Image (cartoon, rainbow, N blue to C red; front, side):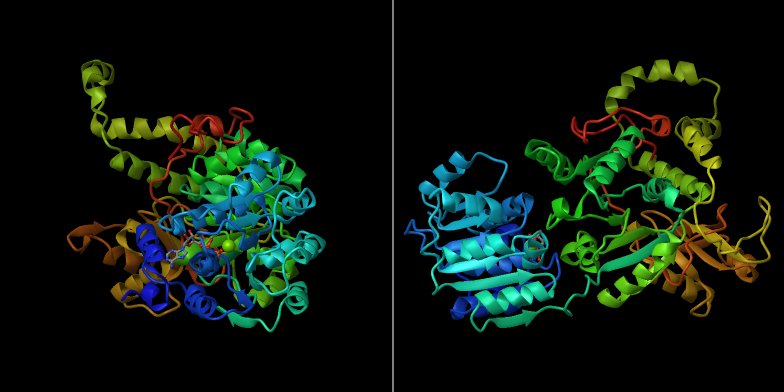
Length: 584
Ligand code: ADP
Ligand code: MG
């Protein structure tokens, strides 16, 4: 018996679950599904984003619905069109072996008559945004007077968005003797009010601690001058070549402006906000899902609930007004048990907001430094080297080889490598070598060393040629270094793992010893190379950080040569967004 079977789910669902590759239920699923299957009850379930709430209500609802009746029996309300479509798609996948079950999505911005037609054909489950739902009730296009189950999904956000009155109206069209299941990431007063007003003795379940952010997310902040926000954003992106991120701005205008600037600078970016037409929003969301857009710049409302896995970074270009909102933002990453990073760009005057958020999410932020130009160049350079190494050779090139050989005659291997790298690297380097330190306050620590010398004072940053693809994250790499070097806990810090290489710091007194230890050092037959990084800095703060390089996934970014001169305009990442060869 599988774990899902033990929850009381029937074969059609179990088959779909195995097709989906879900191995075991998540906590919120484990807690809600048996209750909802066995009891007719109201339920309030609090769980962070990305914990599988859709299936927690979706599985029981699908199993309880009579698919041979065409009556609408289940209603799911969700705050946004994107989320509405997402839930509908998930439910369709879950119910693929349940014959005759129709799930219909109704939401604004699309043809209401078409949606009415779909309802008319028989929709046992309707997934709706509140606005369109009210509209359709008003026009007698949908009948929810016989529903058995009503789900309020992302209830906190629906209330945030001012849907209270709409929800009240909609619920007044439903029968009294139905059961209401409320799902929410957080439990602000307003949600408690809804639960009190519209629900009858709900069973309450909580996963994790109330209002806590996802623990798989690391929170970092970067202090910069107010005018350097954009430059800082660019550096954060450049320092993370595989970035796949949602960038949050406070207003629609800023969202549009930042996205436009990024696109102009050659990034695969797109804007998502309420002033765009539905068609534009769909386009950008599709590109984002396909990872053609690597940086989705969004307002809180537009991005709410979007379930795109593998988001590596959430970047708070500006902090939100409400602390609750921060929880929702950072919940866009670290989904389904993966780790993620939530970065906040702040000015000094906003620092107390960080403290307030820390208190709310009960997690500490790491204070980090915006990487300087040299560190970024290093990262990009090694990234490029690895990309070259991993590129599959295109055999079509064979026939051109004689001609290419003619052109490159007389250039030896080393020279050739240097030239190849210079093609991509020089422009990048030129851009960054002229840039200033963006960090608002100085950490004061540096190596003070000249090229090639072994630094003797301050903190020293090292490059090491192992990274996440070798199975390390910052914690395990730190352990490895400490064990190998026989050091104390605090001796190794600012460990920063990338895909195929990493950085770390020690105090300069240890440098000679470290370089010596790693001379001709072999691990499992492979040379481990440690060098003093040209970049003295590295993050501030304690610990170090965990980073997930996103492997594969399309969407080349940064037409290296073009990026910093302004490339193509507009386009929200359509046309595949793929630039020629980016600087990797
Ligand atoms: P939430 O509504 O809590 O934010 P979702 O329902 O959108 O979370 O689920 C997040 C992701 O996790 C989705 O991609 C979903 O398909 C996946 N998922 C849900 N349940 C499981 C499970 N039991 N095992 C593996 N993946 C799951
Ligand atoms: Mg959800």
